[in-house]
Image 1 (cartoon, helix red, strand yellow):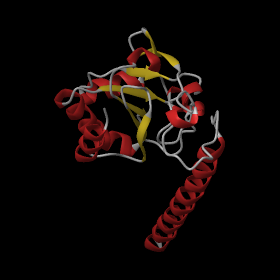
Image 2 (cartoon, helix red, strand yellow):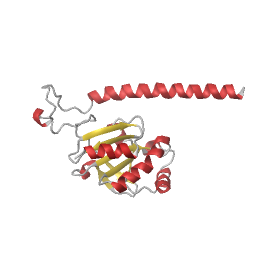
Image 3 (cartoon, helix red, strand yellow):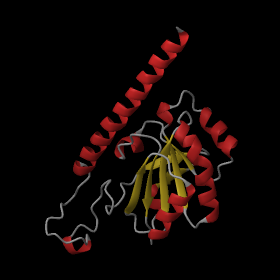
Image 4 (cartoon, one colour):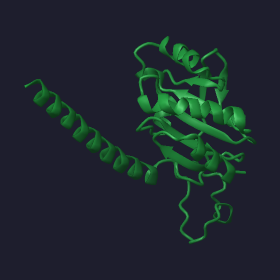
Length: 196
């Protein structure tokens, strides 16, 4: 009897996970098509500068990443725009998220081995306790900046679903790659080397 109950529960969880993944992917695709667009490119040209879109912001690849300002774990105010001129990996995560936990050692290795800035935005409003964050940072020996999104402002701006989600942003502030889900070290390096 116990085995039957466990199988039913696990099957239900699997079905829910698949439904949630499919549902969130559709929502994200629809949202990415509509939000933050300043001008649409209707001329058929691929160059943003040729179409007057050089300063359009959005969540799509090729758009400038929307700016935000958050406080770091150690109390310093940091804005994404502070990192203009540098290549940035912007990562959204939470301590309770198993794929986030799996991704963190690769992010630390990436930060140590490449000339990249990592801004790890903790979705603090989703944490059971703010104190979980420094404990997590200590557990994984993380040395890159941890930004605390206490009110889910950046998470809402970037329409984060699922977590982790990452954006690779070039030195001009443009999104060059986005990952919905965990990335491994090899993928981080591969996408980093494509950026200027």
